[in-house]
Amino acid sequence: MKTLIRTPGLILRILISVLLIVIFLTPFYWMILTAFKTLGEVLAMPPKFWVQSLQWQNFKDAFTRIDFLHYTRNSLIITLGTLIGQVLVVVPAAYAFARYDFKGKNWLFGTVLATMMIPGQLIFLPIFVMFAKSGLLNTYVSLIVPFIASGTAIFMLRQTFMQVPDSQLEAARLDNAGEFKIIYTIMMPAAIPTLSTLALLTFIGTWNSYFFPLVWTTTDAVRTLPLGIQRLQDIEGLSPQIVMAGNMMLIVPILIVFVVARKQIIKAFTYMGVK
Amino acid sequence: MKNRSKSMKLLPYLLVAPAVLILTIFYIYPILYNVYLSFFTWNMRGPMKFAGLDNYIELFKGRDFLGTLSNTLLYMVMDVTLVMVLAMLLALFLQKNTFINRFIQTLSFTPNIISLISVSLIWMWLMNTDTGLFNYLLSLIGAGPVGWLTDKQVALFSLVLVSVWKSVGFNALIITSALGSIPAHLYEAAALDNASKQSVFFQITLKMISPTLFFLILMNIIGSFQVFETINIMTQGGPANATNTLIFSIYKQSFEYYRVGYAAAMAVVLMAIVGLITIFYFKAMGRRVHYR
Image 1 (cartoon, one colour):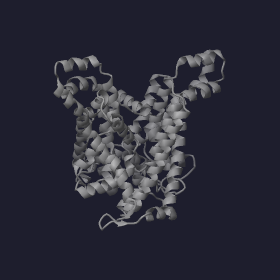
Image 2 (tube, chains in turn cyan, yellow; image 1 turned 60 degrees about the vertical axis):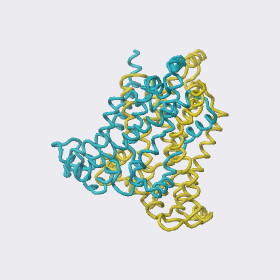
Image 3 (tube, rainbow over the protein chains, first blue to last red; image 1 turned 90 degrees about the vertical axis):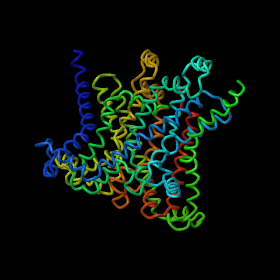
Image 4 (spheres, chains in turn green, red; image 1 turned 30 degrees about the vertical axis):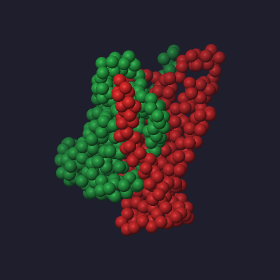
Protein backbone atom coordinates (compact mmCIF):
# COMPACT_ATOMS: atom_id res chain seq x y z
CA MET A 1 0.00 0.00 0.00
CA LYS A 2 2.74 2.39 0.98
CA THR A 3 4.48 2.23 -2.39
CA LEU A 4 1.18 2.81 -4.17
CA ILE A 5 0.59 6.02 -2.28
CA ARG A 6 4.10 7.23 -2.96
CA THR A 7 3.99 6.50 -6.68
CA PRO A 8 2.46 9.78 -7.99
CA GLY A 9 4.99 11.83 -6.05
CA LEU A 10 7.81 9.65 -7.32
CA ILE A 11 6.71 9.97 -10.93
CA LEU A 12 6.49 13.74 -10.51
CA ARG A 13 10.02 13.76 -9.06
CA ILE A 14 11.34 11.76 -11.98
CA LEU A 15 9.61 14.03 -14.48
CA ILE A 16 11.02 17.17 -12.88
CA SER A 17 14.48 15.60 -12.70
CA VAL A 18 14.40 14.74 -16.40
CA LEU A 19 13.16 18.23 -17.22
CA LEU A 20 16.00 19.80 -15.24
CA ILE A 21 18.58 17.60 -16.93
CA VAL A 22 17.18 18.56 -20.33
CA ILE A 23 17.19 22.27 -19.48
CA PHE A 24 20.78 22.31 -18.34
CA LEU A 25 22.17 19.88 -20.89
CA THR A 26 20.43 20.94 -24.11
CA PRO A 27 22.43 24.13 -24.81
CA PHE A 28 25.70 22.19 -24.48
CA TYR A 29 24.38 19.30 -26.54
CA TRP A 30 23.24 21.72 -29.24
CA MET A 31 26.65 23.38 -29.33
CA ILE A 32 28.49 20.06 -29.67
CA LEU A 33 26.02 18.77 -32.23
CA THR A 34 26.29 21.94 -34.31
CA ALA A 35 30.08 21.89 -34.11
CA PHE A 36 30.10 18.49 -35.85
CA LYS A 37 27.47 19.21 -38.52
CA THR A 38 27.86 20.30 -42.13
CA LEU A 39 26.42 23.67 -43.05
CA GLY A 40 23.62 21.85 -44.88
CA GLU A 41 22.67 19.95 -41.73
CA VAL A 42 22.90 23.12 -39.67
CA LEU A 43 20.36 24.91 -41.83
CA ALA A 44 18.08 21.91 -42.33
CA MET A 45 14.49 22.32 -41.20
CA PRO A 46 13.31 20.39 -39.26
CA PRO A 47 16.66 20.37 -37.41
CA LYS A 48 18.59 17.12 -37.13
CA PHE A 49 19.14 15.82 -33.61
CA TRP A 50 22.06 13.63 -34.66
CA VAL A 51 24.90 13.95 -37.18
CA GLN A 52 25.58 11.87 -40.30
CA SER A 53 29.35 12.03 -40.04
CA LEU A 54 31.55 14.05 -37.70
CA GLN A 55 32.92 17.15 -39.43
CA TRP A 56 36.34 17.58 -37.82
CA GLN A 57 37.02 20.09 -40.56
CA ASN A 58 34.95 22.64 -38.57
CA PHE A 59 37.57 22.65 -35.82
CA LYS A 60 40.39 23.07 -38.34
CA ASP A 61 38.48 25.95 -39.91
CA ALA A 62 37.87 27.65 -36.58
CA PHE A 63 41.54 27.21 -35.77
CA THR A 64 42.76 28.83 -38.99
CA ARG A 65 40.14 31.53 -39.61
CA ILE A 66 41.32 33.40 -36.55
CA ASP A 67 44.86 33.36 -35.19
CA PHE A 68 43.82 30.81 -32.59
CA LEU A 69 47.33 30.18 -31.28
CA HIS A 70 47.96 33.90 -30.79
CA TYR A 71 44.83 34.32 -28.68
CA THR A 72 45.49 31.10 -26.75
CA ARG A 73 49.04 32.18 -25.98
CA ASN A 74 47.78 35.55 -24.70
CA SER A 75 45.20 33.80 -22.54
CA LEU A 76 47.84 31.52 -21.08
CA ILE A 77 50.33 34.33 -20.43
CA ILE A 78 47.70 36.48 -18.73
CA THR A 79 46.27 33.60 -16.70
CA LEU A 80 49.70 32.43 -15.59
CA GLY A 81 50.89 35.98 -14.91
CA THR A 82 47.85 36.67 -12.75
CA LEU A 83 48.35 33.42 -10.82
CA ILE A 84 52.03 34.08 -10.09
CA GLY A 85 51.44 37.75 -9.33
CA GLN A 86 48.67 36.84 -6.91
CA VAL A 87 50.88 34.49 -4.93
CA LEU A 88 53.65 37.10 -4.71
CA VAL A 89 51.36 39.91 -3.60
CA VAL A 90 48.50 38.26 -1.75
CA VAL A 91 50.43 35.82 0.44
CA PRO A 92 52.61 38.42 2.22
CA ALA A 93 49.65 40.78 2.67
CA ALA A 94 47.39 38.05 4.07
CA TYR A 95 50.20 36.95 6.39
CA ALA A 96 50.68 40.46 7.76
CA PHE A 97 46.93 40.97 8.24
CA ALA A 98 46.64 37.61 9.99
CA ARG A 99 49.72 37.65 12.18
CA TYR A 100 50.73 41.20 13.02
CA ASP A 101 49.30 44.06 14.95
CA PHE A 102 50.29 47.35 13.46
CA LYS A 103 49.03 50.88 13.45
CA GLY A 104 46.39 51.44 10.80
CA LYS A 105 45.86 47.71 10.28
CA ASN A 106 42.08 47.83 10.62
CA TRP A 107 41.92 50.81 8.37
CA LEU A 108 44.04 49.16 5.66
CA PHE A 109 42.14 45.89 5.92
CA GLY A 110 38.89 47.83 5.69
CA THR A 111 40.16 49.27 2.41
CA VAL A 112 40.88 45.76 1.13
CA LEU A 113 37.37 44.60 2.05
CA ALA A 114 35.77 47.71 0.57
CA THR A 115 37.35 47.04 -2.82
CA MET A 116 35.51 43.72 -2.88
CA MET A 117 32.24 45.64 -3.12
CA ILE A 118 33.31 47.80 -6.07
CA PRO A 119 32.29 46.31 -9.43
CA GLY A 120 35.21 46.69 -11.83
CA GLN A 121 32.77 47.36 -14.66
CA LEU A 122 32.06 50.75 -13.11
CA ILE A 123 35.63 51.99 -13.29
CA PHE A 124 36.90 50.55 -16.55
CA LEU A 125 36.82 53.99 -18.17
CA PRO A 126 39.11 55.92 -15.78
CA ILE A 127 41.51 52.96 -15.80
CA PHE A 128 41.48 52.94 -19.60
CA VAL A 129 42.40 56.63 -19.58
CA MET A 130 45.18 55.91 -17.05
CA PHE A 131 46.55 53.16 -19.28
CA ALA A 132 46.35 55.33 -22.37
CA LYS A 133 48.18 58.20 -20.68
CA SER A 134 50.92 55.99 -19.25
CA GLY A 135 51.51 54.02 -22.44
CA LEU A 136 50.31 50.78 -20.86
CA LEU A 137 47.53 50.23 -23.38
CA ASN A 138 47.81 46.89 -25.23
CA THR A 139 50.36 45.46 -22.82
CA TYR A 140 50.19 42.29 -20.74
CA VAL A 141 50.77 44.43 -17.65
CA SER A 142 47.41 46.17 -18.13
CA LEU A 143 45.56 42.85 -18.10
CA ILE A 144 47.51 41.27 -15.23
CA VAL A 145 48.44 43.82 -12.57
CA PRO A 146 44.93 45.12 -11.74
CA PHE A 147 43.86 41.59 -10.84
CA ILE A 148 46.73 40.34 -8.69
CA ALA A 149 45.75 42.07 -5.44
CA SER A 150 42.33 40.43 -5.19
CA GLY A 151 40.48 41.38 -2.02
CA THR A 152 38.72 38.01 -1.94
CA ALA A 153 42.03 36.17 -2.06
CA ILE A 154 43.54 38.26 0.75
CA PHE A 155 40.44 37.71 2.86
CA MET A 156 40.30 33.93 2.34
CA LEU A 157 44.01 33.42 2.88
CA ARG A 158 44.02 35.57 6.01
CA GLN A 159 41.35 33.34 7.54
CA THR A 160 43.54 30.31 6.86
CA PHE A 161 46.74 31.89 8.17
CA MET A 162 45.01 32.85 11.42
CA GLN A 163 44.35 29.19 12.11
CA VAL A 164 48.01 28.13 12.07
CA PRO A 165 48.95 27.42 15.73
CA ASP A 166 51.07 30.05 17.50
CA SER A 167 53.43 27.36 18.79
CA GLN A 168 54.66 26.60 15.29
CA LEU A 169 55.49 30.23 14.68
CA GLU A 170 57.24 30.63 18.03
CA ALA A 171 59.35 27.56 17.44
CA ALA A 172 60.43 28.89 14.07
CA ARG A 173 61.26 32.30 15.50
CA LEU A 174 63.35 30.70 18.25
CA ASP A 175 65.31 29.04 15.45
CA ASN A 176 65.86 32.54 14.11
CA ALA A 177 63.98 31.81 10.93
CA GLY A 178 63.41 34.92 8.82
CA GLU A 179 59.88 36.07 8.12
CA PHE A 180 60.01 34.98 4.50
CA LYS A 181 61.26 31.56 5.55
CA ILE A 182 58.29 31.35 7.91
CA ILE A 183 55.95 32.28 5.12
CA TYR A 184 57.33 29.72 2.71
CA THR A 185 58.00 26.83 5.08
CA ILE A 186 55.13 27.09 7.57
CA MET A 187 52.34 29.31 6.32
CA MET A 188 52.10 28.31 2.68
CA PRO A 189 52.23 24.54 3.25
CA ALA A 190 49.49 24.95 5.87
CA ALA A 191 47.40 26.87 3.36
CA ILE A 192 47.74 24.57 0.36
CA PRO A 193 44.01 23.78 0.16
CA THR A 194 43.11 27.47 0.23
CA LEU A 195 45.89 28.33 -2.23
CA SER A 196 44.80 25.72 -4.72
CA THR A 197 41.18 26.82 -4.35
CA LEU A 198 42.22 30.40 -5.08
CA ALA A 199 44.29 29.23 -8.03
CA LEU A 200 41.25 27.45 -9.47
CA LEU A 201 39.03 30.51 -9.04
CA THR A 202 41.66 32.73 -10.63
CA PHE A 203 42.15 30.33 -13.52
CA ILE A 204 38.43 30.14 -14.25
CA GLY A 205 37.96 33.89 -13.86
CA THR A 206 40.91 34.88 -16.01
CA TRP A 207 40.39 32.27 -18.71
CA ASN A 208 36.76 33.36 -19.09
CA SER A 209 37.44 37.08 -18.79
CA TYR A 210 35.96 38.98 -21.70
CA PHE A 211 35.00 42.44 -20.52
CA PHE A 212 38.37 43.79 -19.40
CA PRO A 213 40.42 42.44 -22.32
CA LEU A 214 37.77 44.03 -24.54
CA VAL A 215 37.68 47.48 -22.98
CA TRP A 216 41.36 47.81 -22.12
CA THR A 217 42.78 46.95 -25.54
CA THR A 218 42.58 48.67 -28.89
CA THR A 219 44.47 46.11 -30.99
CA ASP A 220 44.71 42.33 -31.15
CA ALA A 221 48.22 42.32 -29.63
CA VAL A 222 47.33 41.04 -26.15
CA ARG A 223 43.68 40.07 -26.67
CA THR A 224 42.56 36.76 -25.24
CA LEU A 225 40.73 33.70 -26.52
CA PRO A 226 37.18 34.83 -25.60
CA LEU A 227 37.75 37.88 -27.83
CA GLY A 228 39.16 35.63 -30.53
CA ILE A 229 35.96 33.59 -30.43
CA GLN A 230 33.91 36.75 -30.74
CA ARG A 231 36.01 37.69 -33.76
CA LEU A 232 35.21 34.26 -35.18
CA GLN A 233 31.51 35.05 -34.73
CA ASP A 234 32.01 38.39 -36.51
CA ILE A 235 33.63 36.86 -39.58
CA GLU A 236 31.94 33.44 -39.63
CA GLY A 237 28.53 34.30 -38.20
CA LEU A 238 26.79 32.68 -41.15
CA SER A 239 28.56 29.37 -40.48
CA PRO A 240 27.34 28.46 -36.99
CA GLN A 241 29.13 25.11 -37.18
CA ILE A 242 32.52 26.87 -37.27
CA VAL A 243 31.57 29.32 -34.50
CA MET A 244 30.36 26.47 -32.30
CA ALA A 245 33.53 24.49 -32.98
CA GLY A 246 35.61 27.47 -31.88
CA ASN A 247 33.35 27.95 -28.88
CA MET A 248 33.87 24.32 -27.89
CA MET A 249 37.62 24.82 -27.92
CA LEU A 250 37.16 27.71 -25.48
CA ILE A 251 34.92 25.70 -23.16
CA VAL A 252 36.73 22.36 -23.09
CA PRO A 253 39.75 23.42 -20.94
CA ILE A 254 37.39 24.80 -18.29
CA LEU A 255 35.20 21.70 -18.41
CA ILE A 256 38.25 19.44 -17.94
CA VAL A 257 39.32 21.49 -14.92
CA PHE A 258 35.76 21.30 -13.60
CA VAL A 259 35.53 17.54 -14.00
CA VAL A 260 38.88 17.05 -12.25
CA ALA A 261 38.38 19.53 -9.40
CA ARG A 262 34.59 19.63 -9.17
CA LYS A 263 34.35 19.29 -5.40
CA GLN A 264 36.94 21.94 -4.69
CA ILE A 265 35.49 24.41 -7.19
CA ILE A 266 31.99 24.03 -5.80
CA LYS A 267 33.34 24.44 -2.27
CA ALA A 268 35.20 27.59 -3.31
CA PHE A 269 32.12 29.13 -4.89
CA THR A 270 30.02 28.18 -1.88
CA TYR A 271 32.57 29.84 0.37
CA MET A 272 32.46 33.03 -1.68
CA GLY A 273 28.68 32.95 -1.63
CA VAL A 274 28.25 32.65 2.10
CA LYS A 275 31.19 34.74 3.34
CA MET B 1 67.17 41.52 19.62
CA LYS B 2 66.53 45.28 19.68
CA ASN B 3 67.42 45.61 16.01
CA ARG B 4 65.14 42.83 15.06
CA SER B 5 62.16 44.32 16.85
CA LYS B 6 62.73 47.64 15.13
CA SER B 7 62.75 46.13 11.67
CA MET B 8 59.78 44.01 12.73
CA LYS B 9 57.80 47.19 13.21
CA LEU B 10 58.28 48.17 9.59
CA LEU B 11 57.89 44.68 8.23
CA PRO B 12 54.07 44.36 8.21
CA TYR B 13 53.84 47.58 6.21
CA LEU B 14 56.28 46.21 3.65
CA LEU B 15 54.29 42.98 3.44
CA VAL B 16 50.96 44.68 2.78
CA ALA B 17 52.38 47.50 0.65
CA PRO B 18 52.24 45.86 -2.82
CA ALA B 19 48.65 44.69 -2.36
CA VAL B 20 47.41 47.96 -0.86
CA LEU B 21 49.24 49.94 -3.54
CA ILE B 22 47.64 47.97 -6.38
CA LEU B 23 44.18 48.18 -4.82
CA THR B 24 44.62 51.92 -4.37
CA ILE B 25 45.79 52.47 -7.94
CA PHE B 26 43.16 50.26 -9.57
CA TYR B 27 40.15 50.67 -7.29
CA ILE B 28 40.27 53.70 -4.99
CA TYR B 29 41.98 56.20 -7.28
CA PRO B 30 39.87 55.34 -10.39
CA ILE B 31 36.68 56.06 -8.45
CA LEU B 32 37.92 59.58 -7.67
CA TYR B 33 39.33 60.00 -11.16
CA ASN B 34 35.99 58.93 -12.62
CA VAL B 35 34.19 61.64 -10.63
CA TYR B 36 36.79 64.14 -11.85
CA LEU B 37 36.32 63.08 -15.50
CA SER B 38 32.56 63.52 -15.17
CA PHE B 39 32.99 67.29 -14.83
CA PHE B 40 34.71 67.63 -18.21
CA THR B 41 33.92 67.21 -21.86
CA TRP B 42 36.62 65.25 -23.61
CA ASN B 43 36.87 63.04 -26.68
CA MET B 44 40.07 61.22 -25.62
CA ARG B 45 42.20 63.18 -28.07
CA GLY B 46 41.85 66.95 -27.79
CA PRO B 47 42.13 69.04 -24.64
CA MET B 48 39.77 68.48 -21.72
CA LYS B 49 37.22 71.21 -21.23
CA PHE B 50 35.73 71.92 -17.81
CA ALA B 51 31.99 71.50 -18.07
CA GLY B 52 30.74 71.84 -14.52
CA LEU B 53 27.51 69.91 -14.10
CA ASP B 54 26.69 69.94 -17.82
CA ASN B 55 27.13 66.18 -18.21
CA TYR B 56 24.76 65.48 -15.34
CA ILE B 57 22.20 67.97 -16.61
CA GLU B 58 22.33 66.31 -20.02
CA LEU B 59 21.92 62.89 -18.41
CA PHE B 60 18.65 63.76 -16.74
CA LYS B 61 17.32 65.93 -19.53
CA GLY B 62 17.86 63.51 -22.40
CA ARG B 63 15.63 60.51 -23.01
CA ASP B 64 18.65 58.28 -23.69
CA PHE B 65 19.81 57.87 -20.15
CA LEU B 66 16.37 57.51 -18.61
CA GLY B 67 15.50 54.83 -21.18
CA THR B 68 18.74 53.04 -20.40
CA LEU B 69 18.09 53.31 -16.68
CA SER B 70 14.56 51.91 -17.02
CA ASN B 71 15.87 49.00 -19.16
CA THR B 72 18.41 48.28 -16.45
CA LEU B 73 15.83 48.38 -13.67
CA LEU B 74 13.41 46.22 -15.65
CA TYR B 75 16.18 43.70 -16.30
CA MET B 76 17.13 43.76 -12.64
CA VAL B 77 13.60 43.15 -11.36
CA MET B 78 12.98 40.28 -13.80
CA ASP B 79 16.40 38.74 -13.28
CA VAL B 80 16.52 38.90 -9.48
CA THR B 81 12.93 37.70 -9.05
CA LEU B 82 13.30 34.76 -11.42
CA VAL B 83 16.72 33.73 -10.15
CA MET B 84 15.69 33.83 -6.49
CA VAL B 85 12.35 32.05 -6.90
CA LEU B 86 13.71 29.35 -9.21
CA ALA B 87 16.86 28.88 -7.13
CA MET B 88 14.75 28.46 -4.00
CA LEU B 89 12.55 25.86 -5.70
CA LEU B 90 15.57 24.07 -7.13
CA ALA B 91 17.30 24.02 -3.74
CA LEU B 92 14.21 22.61 -2.02
CA PHE B 93 13.83 20.01 -4.77
CA LEU B 94 17.46 18.91 -4.47
CA GLN B 95 17.55 18.97 -0.68
CA LYS B 96 17.81 15.20 -0.27
CA ASN B 97 21.37 14.05 -0.81
CA THR B 98 20.90 11.34 -3.43
CA PHE B 99 23.06 10.45 -6.41
CA ILE B 100 20.67 11.88 -8.96
CA ASN B 101 20.24 15.10 -6.96
CA ARG B 102 23.99 15.58 -6.71
CA PHE B 103 24.22 15.00 -10.45
CA ILE B 104 21.56 17.62 -11.20
CA GLN B 105 23.17 20.03 -8.79
CA THR B 106 26.55 19.71 -10.52
CA LEU B 107 24.90 19.99 -13.92
CA SER B 108 22.95 23.11 -12.98
CA PHE B 109 26.14 24.65 -11.60
CA THR B 110 28.19 24.01 -14.75
CA PRO B 111 26.98 27.08 -16.73
CA ASN B 112 28.33 29.23 -13.92
CA ILE B 113 31.94 28.37 -14.74
CA ILE B 114 31.51 28.79 -18.50
CA SER B 115 32.55 32.09 -20.08
CA LEU B 116 29.62 34.42 -20.76
CA ILE B 117 30.75 34.78 -24.36
CA SER B 118 30.37 31.04 -24.88
CA VAL B 119 27.00 31.00 -23.19
CA SER B 120 25.88 33.99 -25.27
CA LEU B 121 26.96 32.42 -28.56
CA ILE B 122 25.16 29.17 -27.77
CA TRP B 123 21.93 30.89 -26.77
CA MET B 124 22.10 33.23 -29.74
CA TRP B 125 22.15 30.14 -31.91
CA LEU B 126 19.29 28.53 -29.97
CA MET B 127 17.27 31.76 -30.20
CA ASN B 128 17.82 32.35 -33.92
CA THR B 129 14.46 33.33 -35.37
CA ASP B 130 14.68 31.18 -38.52
CA THR B 131 16.97 28.26 -37.74
CA GLY B 132 16.96 28.21 -33.95
CA LEU B 133 15.96 25.19 -31.91
CA PHE B 134 13.53 27.16 -29.74
CA ASN B 135 11.37 28.33 -32.60
CA TYR B 136 11.40 24.83 -34.09
CA LEU B 137 10.13 23.38 -30.80
CA LEU B 138 7.47 26.10 -30.63
CA SER B 139 6.40 25.30 -34.20
CA LEU B 140 5.78 21.69 -33.12
CA ILE B 141 2.99 22.91 -30.86
CA GLY B 142 1.83 25.39 -33.49
CA ALA B 143 3.20 28.48 -31.77
CA GLY B 144 5.69 31.13 -32.73
CA PRO B 145 7.94 32.04 -34.36
CA VAL B 146 9.18 34.35 -31.60
CA GLY B 147 11.75 37.01 -32.40
CA TRP B 148 13.72 36.19 -29.29
CA LEU B 149 16.42 38.74 -29.98
CA THR B 150 14.77 40.81 -32.70
CA ASP B 151 11.42 41.66 -31.13
CA LYS B 152 11.77 44.65 -28.84
CA GLN B 153 9.03 43.36 -26.55
CA VAL B 154 10.92 40.11 -25.98
CA ALA B 155 14.66 40.80 -26.34
CA LEU B 156 15.29 42.03 -22.79
CA PHE B 157 13.46 39.03 -21.38
CA SER B 158 15.53 36.70 -23.58
CA LEU B 159 18.68 38.14 -22.01
CA VAL B 160 17.15 37.53 -18.58
CA LEU B 161 16.52 33.89 -19.55
CA VAL B 162 20.19 33.43 -20.40
CA SER B 163 21.23 35.01 -17.12
CA VAL B 164 18.82 32.83 -15.15
CA TRP B 165 20.08 29.67 -16.86
CA LYS B 166 23.63 30.66 -16.06
CA SER B 167 23.25 31.62 -12.42
CA VAL B 168 20.31 29.68 -10.98
CA GLY B 169 22.46 26.63 -10.19
CA PHE B 170 24.99 28.68 -8.26
CA ASN B 171 22.27 30.43 -6.24
CA ALA B 172 20.54 27.12 -5.55
CA LEU B 173 23.82 25.68 -4.33
CA ILE B 174 24.27 28.46 -1.79
CA ILE B 175 20.67 28.10 -0.63
CA THR B 176 21.12 24.32 -0.34
CA SER B 177 24.13 24.75 1.91
CA ALA B 178 22.17 27.24 4.03
CA LEU B 179 19.27 24.77 4.28
CA GLY B 180 21.70 22.09 5.39
CA SER B 181 22.94 24.20 8.26
CA ILE B 182 19.54 24.66 9.90
CA PRO B 183 19.72 22.79 13.22
CA ALA B 184 17.59 19.62 13.14
CA HIS B 185 16.19 20.20 16.62
CA LEU B 186 14.12 23.12 15.31
CA TYR B 187 12.27 20.77 12.98
CA GLU B 188 11.91 18.16 15.69
CA ALA B 189 10.36 20.74 17.99
CA ALA B 190 7.98 21.81 15.24
CA ALA B 191 6.99 18.18 14.63
CA LEU B 192 6.21 17.78 18.33
CA ASP B 193 4.00 20.84 18.11
CA ASN B 194 2.24 19.37 15.07
CA ALA B 195 3.07 22.51 13.10
CA SER B 196 1.68 22.68 9.57
CA LYS B 197 3.97 22.37 6.57
CA GLN B 198 3.49 26.00 5.64
CA SER B 199 4.24 27.36 9.06
CA VAL B 200 7.34 25.17 9.33
CA PHE B 201 8.51 26.58 5.99
CA PHE B 202 7.80 30.22 6.82
CA GLN B 203 8.61 30.18 10.54
CA ILE B 204 11.71 28.00 10.47
CA THR B 205 13.15 27.35 7.03
CA LEU B 206 12.70 30.79 5.49
CA LYS B 207 13.59 32.62 8.68
CA MET B 208 16.77 30.65 9.23
CA ILE B 209 18.10 31.12 5.70
CA SER B 210 17.01 34.75 5.41
CA PRO B 211 20.56 36.16 5.85
CA THR B 212 21.72 34.00 2.94
CA LEU B 213 18.74 35.00 0.82
CA PHE B 214 19.29 38.70 1.46
CA PHE B 215 22.96 38.36 0.63
CA LEU B 216 22.14 36.57 -2.63
CA ILE B 217 19.54 39.21 -3.51
CA LEU B 218 22.15 41.94 -2.99
CA MET B 219 24.71 40.05 -5.09
CA ASN B 220 22.17 39.47 -7.87
CA ILE B 221 21.07 43.10 -7.86
CA ILE B 222 24.65 44.33 -8.16
CA GLY B 223 25.36 41.66 -10.77
CA SER B 224 22.34 42.60 -12.86
CA PHE B 225 23.47 46.23 -12.96
CA GLN B 226 26.66 45.01 -14.63
CA VAL B 227 25.10 42.99 -17.42
CA PHE B 228 27.24 43.49 -20.51
CA GLU B 229 28.52 40.37 -22.26
CA THR B 230 25.18 38.95 -23.36
CA ILE B 231 24.12 42.37 -24.67
CA ASN B 232 27.34 43.06 -26.54
CA ILE B 233 27.26 39.65 -28.22
CA MET B 234 23.57 38.88 -28.63
CA THR B 235 21.76 42.18 -29.25
CA GLN B 236 24.19 45.14 -29.36
CA GLY B 237 21.65 47.07 -27.29
CA GLY B 238 18.94 46.63 -29.92
CA PRO B 239 16.35 46.23 -31.25
CA ALA B 240 15.43 49.93 -30.99
CA ASN B 241 17.53 50.33 -27.81
CA ALA B 242 15.32 47.82 -25.98
CA THR B 243 18.35 46.11 -24.41
CA ASN B 244 20.55 49.15 -24.01
CA THR B 245 21.50 49.02 -20.34
CA LEU B 246 23.80 51.17 -18.25
CA ILE B 247 27.18 49.45 -18.52
CA PHE B 248 26.67 48.80 -22.23
CA SER B 249 25.71 52.42 -22.70
CA ILE B 250 28.78 53.65 -20.80
CA TYR B 251 30.89 51.41 -23.05
CA LYS B 252 29.27 52.76 -26.21
CA GLN B 253 29.47 56.38 -25.16
CA SER B 254 33.17 55.90 -24.35
CA PHE B 255 34.45 53.92 -27.28
CA GLU B 256 31.97 54.58 -30.06
CA TYR B 257 31.00 58.24 -29.54
CA TYR B 258 34.10 59.23 -27.53
CA ARG B 259 32.08 61.14 -24.94
CA VAL B 260 34.27 60.43 -21.93
CA GLY B 261 32.78 62.99 -19.56
CA TYR B 262 29.22 61.95 -20.31
CA ALA B 263 30.07 58.26 -19.85
CA ALA B 264 31.90 59.04 -16.61
CA ALA B 265 28.86 60.90 -15.30
CA MET B 266 26.74 57.84 -16.05
CA ALA B 267 29.19 55.68 -14.13
CA VAL B 268 29.00 58.07 -11.16
CA VAL B 269 25.21 57.77 -11.08
CA LEU B 270 25.42 53.98 -11.30
CA MET B 271 28.06 53.94 -8.58
CA ALA B 272 25.79 56.00 -6.36
CA ILE B 273 22.91 53.57 -6.93
CA VAL B 274 25.04 50.53 -6.15
CA GLY B 275 26.53 52.31 -3.13
CA LEU B 276 23.11 53.23 -1.74
CA ILE B 277 21.82 49.67 -2.17
CA THR B 278 24.90 48.29 -0.41
CA ILE B 279 24.64 50.74 2.49
CA PHE B 280 20.93 50.06 2.82
CA TYR B 281 21.68 46.33 2.85
CA PHE B 282 24.26 46.56 5.63
CA LYS B 283 22.00 48.84 7.68
CA ALA B 284 19.07 46.46 7.28
CA MET B 285 21.23 43.44 8.05
CA GLY B 286 22.56 45.03 11.18
CA ARG B 287 19.09 45.66 12.51
CA ARG B 288 16.72 43.04 11.28
CA VAL B 289 17.87 39.76 9.88
CA HIS B 290 19.03 37.50 12.64
CA TYR B 291 22.18 35.46 12.53
CA ARG B 292 22.39 32.12 14.22
